[in-house]
Length: 63
Image 1 (tube, one colour):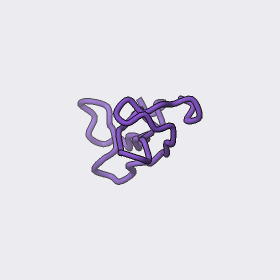
Image 2 (cartoon, one colour):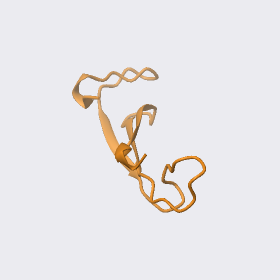
Image 3 (tube, one colour):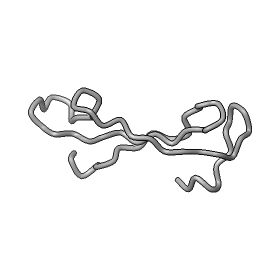
């Protein structure tokens, strides 16, 4: 998803940022597999109001 072509659905802003949730408890892990490393989650969000435009798994190859 290209940040330059986004328009916020909530407020109409075109200014976005990306942030990553990357701690051991917030990573996405395969269902039923306790001892895997999983992947951080990347959020693309509006810098004006905080509306999330995209949620992406950083390392889909972990699955």
